[in-house]
Image (cartoon, rainbow, N blue to C red; front, side):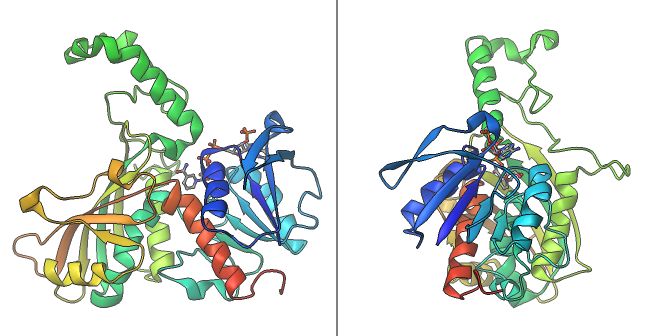
Length: 349
Ligand SMILES: NC(=O)c1ccc[n+]([C@@H]2O[C@H](COP(=O)([O-])OP(=O)(O)OC[C@H]3O[C@@H](n4cnc5c(N)ncnc54)[C@H](OP(=O)(O)O)[C@@H]3O)[C@@H](O)[C@H]2O)c1
């Protein structure tokens, strides 16, 4: 089994390499790819060094499985020829998620969607996955009908450049924190990734505003589309607000969900406690609830603050926190790869 990791020097790609080792993925050889900038760089893998390769026309030859995380534009160019050439590709970008011929898979929720893959499997948006982990089992039991989410998204969701931009701004501002009670707005640092000051601030703008003028951002629109596709609820009414926050890793999502059947917080906790990949942390009396920092570096999505709004016994409020680089990206992709191998769905199309 020869496995390519495309985007191996990036935030997601590095985590994929780490998880392939941590989870003893059954591979004979790993081939890291990145942009021409990184060609020849050396990365550690299983105690040895592997050399980063550049993408060329027939990059996929001899490769059984490719885990690709190099952005949508690169994916659109390099993934279809690889899939046509027999390399099964699990792609982390948004390029193919809404393609009706491409399964969008969260192994704990819709593993069956993998069966008829045509060579490309899409990994979901990191915030959508964090929300879908609890919503999947709750939908199964109570029938999801209506959804409002507000997400608090970490800077590593924009890749390594997002982390660097936050670090630079914190560095610049940390000695003048008290002046931020009445800041000199002209002097605030503004970077290329977030377009506004992200240190000591929150920015209700993730990706671009909808060119059609709906007022939503492309990130918010993607979330609704992915909820509908993964849960197979084409008419699900949902609305998202995505906010960038100065957290390094770990996305938080506040969820308001309405169900066809009545539901109590106790019933929801019981369903979630039995669901794989979820850890319920919900004891307000002892100040126990999830935070994004608690979720960083671990596999489970943390869920708490489960409660019911007064006067509506079909609705729930809850808060989920998940590592956007692990379950939101690399872990989910590696789990898909594990399922593909276990079901003999690599190299047999
Ligand atoms: N970060 C997250 O939380 C997250 C979650 C879910 C999905 N995703 C998706 O995953 C993808 C990668 O995100 P990231 O956060 O890892 O970004 P990143 O840190 O910016 O890494 C991008 C990677 O792509 C490589 N790359 C860029 N241009 C390339 C080219 N022309 N050919 C080959 N490789 C190229 C880069 O190589 P160099 O180092 O050489 O530039 C780097 O390895 C994106 O599509 C993103 O939307 C990210």
